[in-house]
Each structure stands twice: as C-alpha cells, then as structure tokens.
Amino acid sequence: MRYVSTRGQSPAVSLSEAVERGLAPDGGLYVPETFPTIAPETLDGAESLADVAGRVLAPFFAGDALAPALRDICREAFAFPVPLRELRDGTAVLELFHGPTAAFKDVGARFLAALMSRLGGRDARPLTILVATSGDTGGAVAAAFHGRPGVEVAVLFPAGMVSPRQEKQLTAWGGNVRAFAVRGASDDCQRLVKAAMADPELRAARRLSSANSINVGRLLPQMAYYAWASREYVRRHGAEPGFVIPSGNLGNAAAALWARRAGLPVREVVMATNANPAVTAFAAGAPWAAHPTVATLATAMDVGDPSNMERIFHLFGGHEPARRALRAERVDDGEIRRVIREGPAGWGTVWDPHTATAVAARERLGGGDWIVVATAHPAKFEGVVEPLVGHEVAVPPELRRLLGRPSHAEPLEPTLDAFRAALGSQESAES
Ligand SMILES: *Cc1c(COP(=O)(O)O)cnc(C)c1O
Image (cartoon, rainbow, N blue to C red; front, side, top):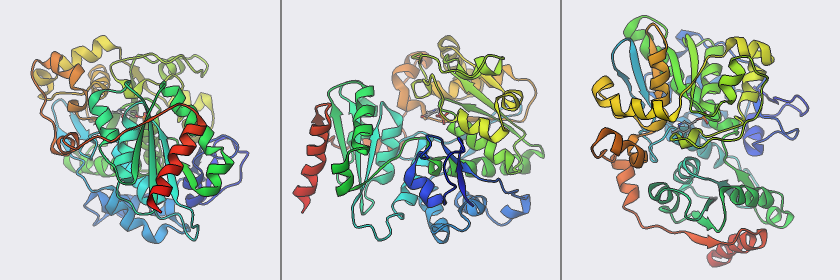
C-alpha cells in the first residue's frame, strides 16, 4: 500500500514515510492510495480488538518495513477495553475512553507511538516528538510515549491556561516526557513547535517529529474500533449500525468513512458538531470555508477549520459528492447542557460535553440501530458536568492514579532561543 497526498503534488510514499513526515511536502494530508475490500470472513476467529485491528490494518501495512511488527503494534496500542454498551431505543454507546487519559485520542496516540518508536532504523539521532497542546492531545501523546526507549517528548502548553486536571495529564510523567509551561498563549506554543521543526541547528542534533492529529498513523487505528463495533452490533441485532460521532477536526469521522469504504458493515456516519459551523454550513449548501473558532463546552471540538475535511473530499472525489454523502448535526451549548442534565434519568448515563453532542444528534435522528461514539469520560470535565447532574462523578482508576502523581513543568519563554537551550539542557544532563 502506498500513501498519496490529498493535494496530488507529492510522490506516493510508504506507510513508514507518511508517518515519519506527518504532512506531505505539498502541504496535503496523506491518505491510502486505494481502499481494499475487507470481506466479513477476514475477521473470522479474531475476537479481541487487537486481533481485529491486525486483520483490518494488514492491507494498509502491506509492503511496508513495519508490516511484520503489526501484530505487536496492535497489542501495544489496543491494551484497554472498548465496550459496546446497549442503551434503549435501538441505541448503543461505544466507549472509547477507558485508556490512560480517559479520551479516545489515547487510541491514535498509542498506535502512533508504537509505530514511531520502530521507525528509527540506523539513524543514531534521538527521536524527539514535539507537541503543542491546549488540552487533550498533549496528554494522550505524553501518556503514549512515556517510558518508550529512544524517544523523547516535549509537550508545550500555555501556562495557566489549561484546566488543573488537564495540566496534570501533561505534567505527571517525567522521564522521557518533558512538559514546558510556555509564558504565552496556545498560538505561541504552535509557533514555537513550527519554528523548532524548521531549525537547522535542532534538526542536525535530533530527528524531530510531531504527533498532531493529521498524521495518518493516528487515523488508521481508529478504523479498527469501527470494524470491531459494527461486527459486534450485527451479531447482536442482525442489522448494520450507523455511527454518530462527536466531531471537531474530523479525524474520527474520516476513519469511520474509511471503514465504510472498505466494506465494513457501517450503514451510515453522522457527524455531531458543537456550535462551530464549518461542517453543517457546508452540508446545508454553503461553499466550504474556514470560520472563526467558537469557544464551547465541548472544548476539544472547538475547531473553525477542520483539517481532515480535506481527506473526506479526497475520499468522495470532490466537494459536491462529499456534500451529498455527508450528514451533520450542530449542537449548541444549551443543548449540551440539557443532554447532560437529562442523561442520568433519560439514558442511565452521565455524559461528558463531547459525547453529549452525539447524544443530542441521536435524539434528532429517527429510526434505530445507532451507535453513539463516546469520546471522553465525564470525570475529565467535572467542572461542567457535576453542577448539571448534581453530584460528583467518580474518577476512573487510570485517571485517579495519574492525578495522584507529582507534577513536573519547566517554565519557558516563548522564543526559539529559549526552547533550543531548554531542549539541549537535558541532553547534556544525561550524557
Ligand atoms: C479530539 C476530540 C474530539 C474530536 O475528534 P476529531 O477526530 O478531531 O473530530 C471529540 N471528543 C473528544 C473528547 C476529543 O478529545
């Protein structure tokens, strides 16, 4: 399998190269050159999620240097449960939040870590992953790379601008994961990472890579849980499910559409967004356009210009065919609050603000055989959730362990000189 750029101006590359580069040289995103058809029998005898992932992803690894490691990579990445829980009214919920940082990004981050730590080959320079984060992604990446030999991670976050629990998820690691509290805003963190990636001095000393959500190595493993859950649903109910997905940058939705294209029993994909209007405005007939980002209760979905839309356009072969295929529902903060408030009585469940958008969308959709995708544990967003449901939300064990660890954050001025010096300091301390 080769990977091509959505913009069509870069050569096709191997999976390893696509993962190492992140972004294609023409500025596009890597996508598989073709989609194999995965017949239902392909999954016969594969019961665990890790085994299903190995079968589903085999054609996407075909011919790559990493193909022989796929089984091990899947075992490392899919090491936590992904339960499909039945609710009522032809609705089930796929819980993707049982990983180390209690959000679905753990899946993609762990898979990417397992891939990247095997990429080095004969290159003696250490691999350094740079992540600028304003919340969830940095924690998932830090957790995924923590303790991996030969890899260092630098997480940059805006000092004082993330919630206390989020900050803990960024700073509780130590060892090969360093957290930098940047004196500035989230944009300053992004800018520093970009400047560092382009800095000849740093590049000579280390292999720099970023683990942001546009890396194809984060999207591929997300197909695996759609394969697993749709087969499970068909076994239980004899009908193909549609998925309702809380969507921001559209990586999770793109993976579901890929799974559907590969012939897996996914009836339909519905994107649930918060008040950010890019997707629903387009679905309703407007030209595709970036919008200013709107701050909402579902913060990890506050995206004004969802980058994975480019992959979706590529998949359908243009804007008009994509528009005809898309289904999206926009959910404002008032409705998020209502769904969270009514969750315990109505669905027997405490929802987090992200999953609540999908529940609201499901309530609007008719019919049955819907799987709501739950992307985060409500205890991550206790400040929003607890006042609405009127009681404390129990913290899951993985998250509790993390919250009990000491924090390490190094203050950092928002300049490349300061960042270069800080990165170099550890090297000399270790040698
Ligand atoms: C990142 C995130 C989303 C959005 O996922 P995309 O793949 O960017 O659409 C939804 N929910 C939670 C909790 C997230 O962290």
